[in-house]
View 1 (tube, rainbow, N blue to C red):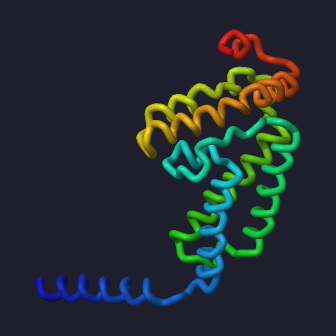
View 2: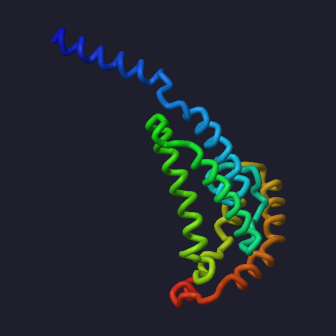
View 3: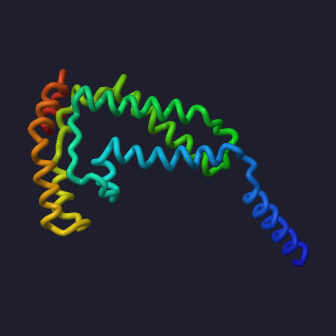
Length: 179
């Protein structure tokens, strides 16, 4: 029993000590990157930010046009290039996992633009209803303020749907019926 307790305490001591060591010199660089990445992500995707409870721009409605896709593409490629300057093999395991998740998101975003191109065939993806519903039902601000956000966002709806109509090239029948 005493030997088991000694062994357990030894393992705990070694694991605590190794967790305190900075064996991964790029952890600080990655932490800085990931903090700025998340903040910039919310600015590029204000609807997503709002959906997860970050109310920085609840009145914004991103117009899904070529300029918007170019903005997202530039952000994605810039962040991928920045991330590639960090060696995931030199990160602590929890940061290496985050690194891979962020890289997966960036690569998926590029693939969606280049290959999947849902914006060209899925008219059902152009639905602003959820964003407006949350403005009314989510109690993040007094109702009069939320209604101001609502009407400011509503002003962008005609441009939003005009861009959607321009984007749709070959809608799939099932998505057309759903839309």
